[in-house]
Length: 231
Image 1: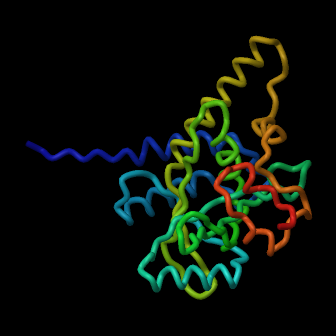
Image 2: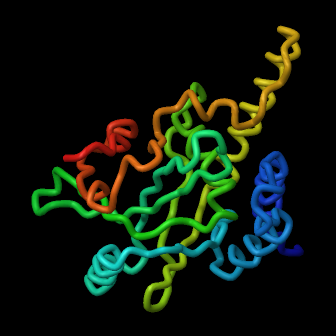
């Protein structure tokens, strides 16, 4: 009997690509959905992952964060998971939102954690990651979907893998379809796919945070973690 192989990666890549084609690609010349999809397939097969992953790298890495990452690696945690948060740079331009990645470190008791800035995603990845992060706490109740793991790097360069993007993309496409149906039913103009941006509180007001504020995040609530006031 011939052996058959089941590779869901192709269908998952198509789902992510459909979502990516909705975004304002003109705002980021480096954003090429087709090339990113092909890179994701090659990376997924190279790592022999069971699902699609999208590779990326961090920019403007923080020295203190890199030191903590190196300490984690020396302790045996070679591929730690990171936490993502959105930083709103321009209130009038949702495509300018940045996605910052943090390394979560627990205290000795394990009851509290501190988040230490590691770096930020490049613009071409922040463009598609930010809308999916904002949808994680919506009425669909999907919760946290995207996951970010360190896969390697040298010196001040950190490589990461973003997984479960196809699940978040599918939820986003459902949201877009529902919004379009609502617009048609009530005879109103269909708004931008970024229209929900202003209704979420997981953003950072321009100039309201500094490097010292990242380390003051202790709780696990998604909204309280983005209160960037002085501790």
